[in-house]
Image 1 (cartoon, rainbow, N blue to C red):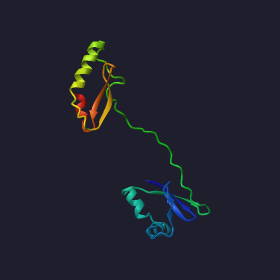
Image 2 (cartoon, helix red, strand yellow):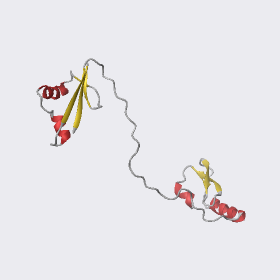
Image 3 (spheres, rainbow, N blue to C red):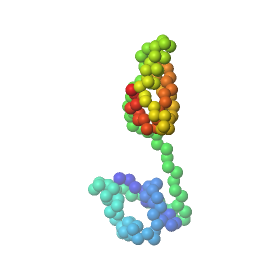
Image 4 (tube, one colour):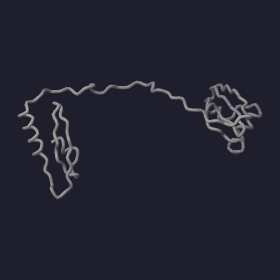
Length: 144
């Protein structure tokens, strides 16, 4: 493990991490270990029993400035699902399309005493269907 300890006017930082105050009691043991020339327990845990290379930079005459985070693009792999364009099963005639829309509309029972909304559905053959639904209907009702 390679770590850079940077000493600033009001505290210290490890690598590009946050500023840690010299006055904070939780940092006292870390700083005491450094003064004695020992590797702090925090860094030993980080190395998991391996070797720790500690470099120190003296910036005690400077105020700490939080480093800007570097943009890292996604380097993993993606998985493509489906095709880039929907596969059209075949075009139907306007008469067939009207019949299908009428059949779909009759399958949904609308309660006029409840709130109603219109939903536009795009079909696989490129057609559109505007269907009325009550707010209480569920997604499954659009598939009937």
